[in-house]
Image (cartoon, rainbow, N blue to C red; front, side, top):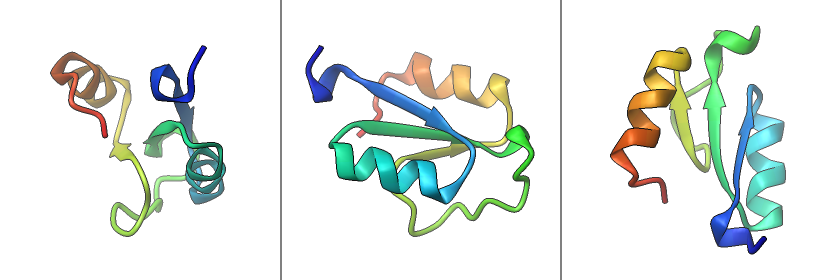
Length: 63
């Protein structure tokens, strides 16, 4: 599978950084135990919960 076809999910800024280095898109969830996850200056989308993640996936516009 190509990097542009891959989506990584995580719950820390370290996950976002790993996705950036791997060249894959990233979605971060605050509900994974890291509720203070910042929403700015992170590569990828930050969602508060799985319902918000579903909205992002249904939009289909992840960068």
